[in-house]
Image (cartoon, rainbow, N blue to C red):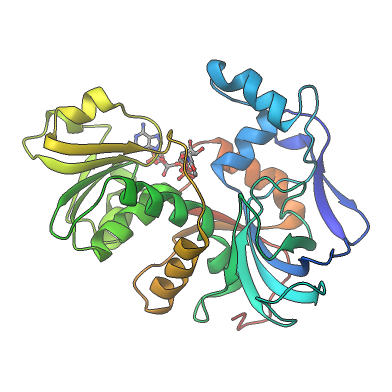
Length: 312
Ligand SMILES: NC(=O)c1ccc[n+]([C@@H]2O[C@H](COP(=O)([O-])OP(=O)(O)OC[C@H]3O[C@@H](n4cnc5c(N)ncnc54)[C@H](OP(=O)(O)O)[C@@H]3O)[C@@H](O)[C@H]2O)c1
């Protein structure tokens, strides 16, 4: 099978398209033919090993001290099940699924992957029927992170929410999920993304290049930092007395029930992934260069199985 590997940390050109043996599923695993994956901010951080000083050593101990342990990157995928191990009960051959590869030995920049039907750190569920594989692949990490953070903030109907970095993946899902729960949402983004953020449902957008949100006159019940570039100290200036600040810098947890809820919300047409650009697997270096820029809007998808027309 075709796969993208990286044998050392570094710039995007450490990624190489190569041929390798197709994996074989164990008894608790499913062999999935991957139709689409994504390039997340987490993927580019793992590739470059660009961790904050405090986390650098622990991260290197987990992911590989001198060279990466996990040679194939890719945290998200959507595809179809080709083979199931004898202990797999939740899924069957032919099912279309989407999910993550969190803390597995391998990732989704490949034509095939073996995923356990259930494991401690990652999740897999049936793909939303109305979404293409490319759209479904763009949901799990960003939408589950946003859902976890809104749960942590205890969002209630009618509350006022400010989403900082509303044009990123986590931010664009946080905005939509907050709206679904009846919040009134203000998004903070640059001027060029105001239209996008409003089209996703924000009542108001603040251009961070022109205005400091912490100086605005509004008060919010929740400030969610979707891009890791604001602080609690700043957020406190616009939070109500009991207001909550949550950030992508917090440890989050992937939950199967959340991915299944995301599937349902997508099928009801309430939650939609925003796809910025799509690249082919052999354009992976370009895709990483683009995500490295820090300017991606929503999600960047890697199309692995070329689709002819309708790819639902
Ligand atoms: N804790 C977790 O489980 C978890 C999970 C997923 C992601 N993350 C982390 O969350 C962060 C966001 O990831 P992501 O993929 O959602 O987004 P991303 O791709 O990193 O964000 C890019 C977006 O952020 C906007 N942006 C850049 N600088 C900004 C600033 N100073 N103020 C406001 N907006 C700014 C950019 O718009 P402009 O070009 O217009 O500025 C762009 O649209 C990453 O650090 C990632 O590692 C954490």
